[in-house]
Length: 413
Image 1 (cartoon, rainbow, N blue to C red):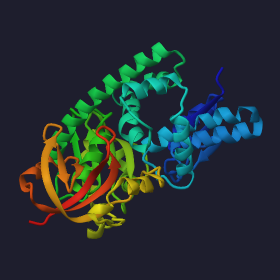
Image 2: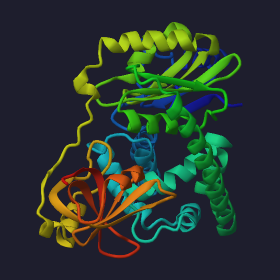
Image 3: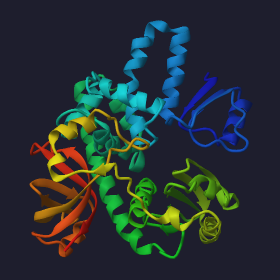
Image 4: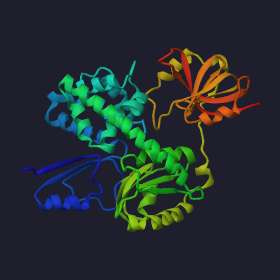
């Protein structure tokens, strides 16, 4: 009896699927934000914008529908901005224009949410204090996404829609447990992927039959951090393999992937992130061709990592008053990054590593600082050294006061 399908965050490449639905007498309305192919599907309607995330496009369709046909539900649709905000941050779309508005007002809704599922998830995540882009991007969204990555996303949907507190608590625990499994799978895949990267390639392409396809996007992101070049990670299957790609500013990864479309079953994504299915026998040929294409686009300037520094601060200017000023310009994220500062000749008073030696923790000029994934630097720094520090100013919610999140440092001794 179904005669209408509305897609969310997918569908712009579903030419054959829409054709099949139409043949069965089913109309399809596509809502999506992925880059349009040359010939999109023959859908009843295509609601599309690359300036929002997929859930943002869907929310906007609902908002316009309510405005025109059901104005009495306006407040209800505005409450759902909390969901659109979570999705916008999780999907790493630029936080400017309409996306910034969705997140700014959505965070206000989220911090007062009445949804039992979100309340339970916040408790299970041990979040203390207000919820901002960091809490969503690093704590809440990974738990929601973990189900779809390695189990099934339906339980995350059940949590969000839960009306019963006990059900919400049970599902929140399930999401946390699944996320821990996801972290273990990701950690193992990253370790092996780092060893497989051919540093002579302009685009790193690595494949393995033991990598879970639900975590390869996370692995690709970690490889980009390590090498500052576009990375493609493939979960190798017997006949077909799944690939996930992440890029760097200045290189359109979905455009690059589509230049090798003869090897692909399907592909979709954005300039900075994409996914595809490939016949396993074509992986090597695909790797060679996409790297030939990269030679025509990628320059040394693109490969040079750049940190945009807002301004230099004196040691005495790193204080709570200036943190509060920085916080007034939130929400921060992709497209609206937190301001980065530099302070020169800071005295190292103490240092250690945390997270099983993974992260470097510093005490500099009376301030605590953390440098993630740089525990290996401990051997080259000693108390009493002077360093130039590039950092973000953050609040230390556990110990009070300020904490610096280090982006780069240079030892002066």
